[in-house]
Image 1 (spheres, rainbow, N blue to C red):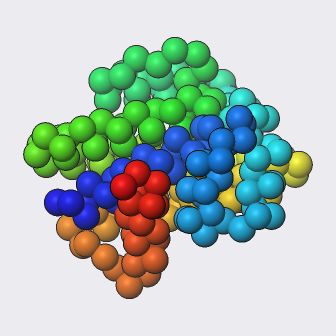
Image 2: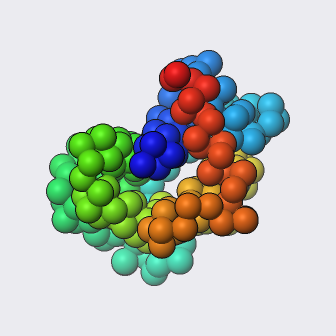
Length: 196
């Protein structure tokens, strides 16, 4: 349980770090370094994070036809509401999506601290579904549609892909898979290095 709590705290730091890159938060940079980003990748993310976080699904979900894309922010907002959350602002923006993920992971931390493993698993399931259905496709759309931001977006997509793999492992009760041992340990160590 302690390892699960440490990993989940590390995951929370990932999302908080992405959201606080625009203020050059040294702790955010440190967390992302510990997760394997080099200085070039950090610089690319930092210089583009404000513009990236403002991008939205209605402009970049190129996998959808234009009519569906124009209505898709409503679909995302319904996802938030069905999960029990009320979101202010543009429901389809990357900033809102990362904030939603941070809130979900933070709520999972709270559930684990209370010993509510069923709720923690429910929250993990919501996170995995959200990442696969909304956040990852938006990032892929930005990569193919916005040359200026594609490199920074690829960095974010790699972090999200790693988190998706981790969530899949956690949901299937596999503590560590050979492919994700490094990423699991980095999440766990990230929390311990920054908060213990």
